[in-house]
Image (cartoon, rainbow, N blue to C red):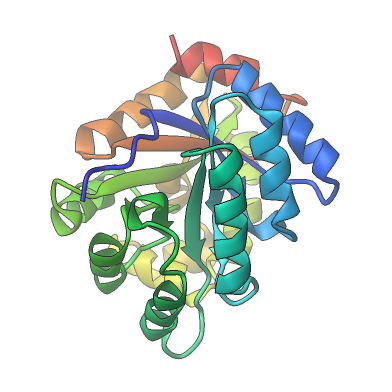
Length: 268
């Protein structure tokens, strides 16, 4: 399976409930030079938000990071993909995940079986653990993990092999003050550490229960890039060197809009 062409860099935006606002945000990020834009799954309430982002942009790929298979039916996703493929071919990347029940692998396999009208080369999975990475390799174009280290990326590349796509989501804070940057990083981490899949992967990466419970500086600094544009660019480069095809940045605080600064640092 050829790697999906996402470009080396992307950006994550939080889609607004109002599709018009989502469309404006997507157009702004494309204008800053990012070739791929991902819609954060936590704020994805309707597939109309996907359509709004696609139609508001000229050529950027629009991906979902992620569509939760527990919230959106496969038939609805397939229908939306067909509509957008007809009008904007090759621009919608279906990122799937969110199977947090007792049998997440079986849930995703069954969902992919139903989604058989969407070509494999247009699908990525939010894989973290080794078995989920294997599923991403075997049933999609690749994986889009979040809250991982460059060392994890190197191991994921080994599991995925040379033909699958590895797209890493990297949370970033454009802030040089360590106390303020870490406080911003701890806001999403304080919730996500409670999700079993994330906490299990933190342990696989070598973080202790104390690191996870206390959100130590060690785990915060390893999982979230903070600093000025050059420091964030250096972390992005580490992921590329470790085997990531694509790194997409997810700003945690804005000033109020970080895209011009991030674009200047990352896309030069």
